[in-house]
Structures are given as C-alpha cells and as structure tokens.
Amino acid sequence: MSAKTDDTPPPLPAPLRVPVADSHTHLDMQSGTVEEGLRKAASVGVTTVVQVGCDIKGSRWAAETAAAHENVWAAVALHPNEAPRIVHGDPDGWSRQGTREAGGDAALDEALAEIDRLAGLDPVRAVGETGLDHFRTGPEGIAAQERSFRAHIEIAKRHGKALVIHDRDAHADVLRILAEEGAPERTVFHCYSGDADMARICADAGYFMSFAGNVTFKNAQPLRDALAVAPLELVLVETDAPFLTPAPYRGRPNAPYLVPITVRAMAAVRGIDEDAMSEAIAANTARAFDY
Image: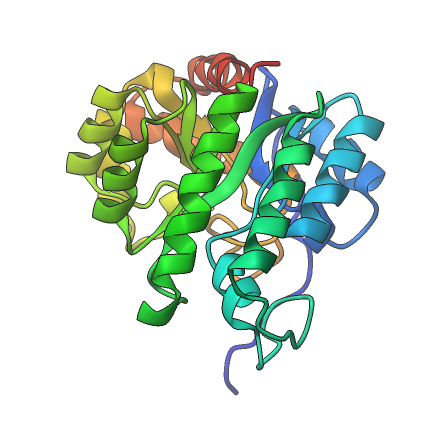
C-alpha cells in the first residue's frame, strides 16, 4: 500500500522553559480556530506568532487577526507567485482565489497600493513574504515578480517595517535586488534555504535567517551547516505552518505548537542548551519585528 499523507496532528512536545516566537506562520491555512492554535502553542512555550499574508485577502486577514490578539503580529504582502497571477492571470486556478483573468500592470499597482495601506497599520510589523520564486513561476513571470519585490522593499523602508523574504531557487537574484534597492534595516530570510556560504553573506549584511522544520530533515545537511555558521544574534525559528512539519512528523500538519522540536534540533546543531537557544531566538524575533 502506498504511503499517504497523515492528517493526524502530531502530539504536543515537551514545553520550552524559555518562551519563544514563531516568526512565520499561516494560521488561516491551519485547522481549528485561531484561539485554539494560540492556546496550544502557548502551552508549550510558543507565546508569540507572526501571521503572514500571501495575497490581498490573506494580508487583510493577517492585519485583522493581529489587531484582535495581543500576541499576534502581522506581515502583509503579495507572495512572489501571486504577482505573476495578478498580471498574467491564473487560468488553472492554482491559488486559493481560483481562476483569474489577466489584470496587467495596473492590477499589480492596485494590489501594491493596498499592501502599502496595510503596512501602515500598527499591528503589521513586516512587509512579506515577498521576494523571488524561480521554482514555481517560469521565465514569463520573472518581470512581475521582480517589480513586485522592488515595490515591497520600498514599502517596508518607507513604513519602517521589517522585510520578510521568500527565496526559492533564486538566491543570487534575491541578494542582487536587495543590494540594488538597499535592504530595509531589518530583513528576514524566511525558511532560510541557502548554504553556509550564503549564510556568511547574509551575516555580513545583517540579515536575519529564520529556520523552519526542514532543518530536521535527513537530507538537509546544507541547512544545518548554514545554521552552524550563522551568528546566533541573527537566528530565528518558524513553522511556515501548515507546511514543513519537523521530523519525525514530516507529512503531518504543522502548527506553531511544534516549534519546540525545531528549537531543540537547532540547539543541538549549535552545541548549546535549549534555554540558551530559546533566549537568543526570543530576543532576536522581538528585535526583528520591533515588538
């Protein structure tokens, strides 16, 4: 019998003694209510979450959810794969909005104006996830992605908010555009996916590197090598839930309450105890998102 995805939520891990934040999650894509998810997370020492928007609807929801919950902050953006869908249309309906007609550059400008408006709200502490994705979007979508990315950088700087980067198979181009535009004071590589050499480049630039559950995967030695050389004061943890569930629960639904598994794996890579890892992560996340 072939293996199937198991939808059973993994069990609660042992609580962290030092509370930490999940720097990147998608509560709107997880089962159960926001309140249930936050309660479960808090019970194991994950007391703050950054809720990340990927499109207009999700970004509005993130801002509203952060406004309604003391320990939730929001990030708002058009995901790199969203920008080409707005410009060129989405005939396959792959995104959550379903099939869409091409709107051209005018539609992208309109969407970016709404992200700009949301970025000015106090519960919104970051602009992201933005960046480049050469894995899912083909060459025809690169121009739209780059234009959107540059606009998000400008929005983040103008509002004094952190920039949250999505970088998939696009390391050199992401770093180039950040250098060309001038990165915001606080820039976070979400779900860091580079190697140790790139970690050194990010460290030199002062970019935060946020590690997700995939740092626990057997085939992820390059990620662990990157974590080993990243300055401790630039390291964050995240779930990217419901995706990237840490081992040994890979393939099951992820949620903020599973952060302790990743924190412990990160502490092992660094050769420090989990309390020291948690203390660094907590301080770094508060600094990155200015809360």
